[in-house]
Image (cartoon, rainbow, N blue to C red; front, side, top):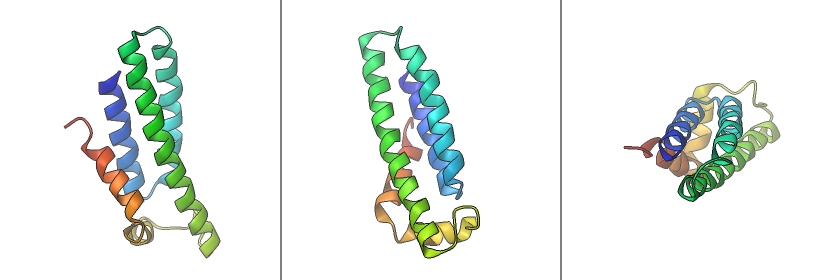
Length: 108
């Protein structure tokens, strides 16, 4: 469960760093649902691993949603923002950048 969680975290971080916030959020939710089914029949250790995964991705989801809302408030809208403009905006958002870096380093 922890290996799969690390992979999903890394995958979502890579999507978000590429500027695809919505796809990253959808991927996290899809994997979360699948892992929830697996965790329901797993050992206590795997359930703990799943809970940590869910908490981490909930925080990432919230940060990505806030970034999307800020973009929409500025006027670009999430669908209009290019990857380069999202990278520029993210460079001013240290918390999100640090979180994405941490998620990409998981499993190494």
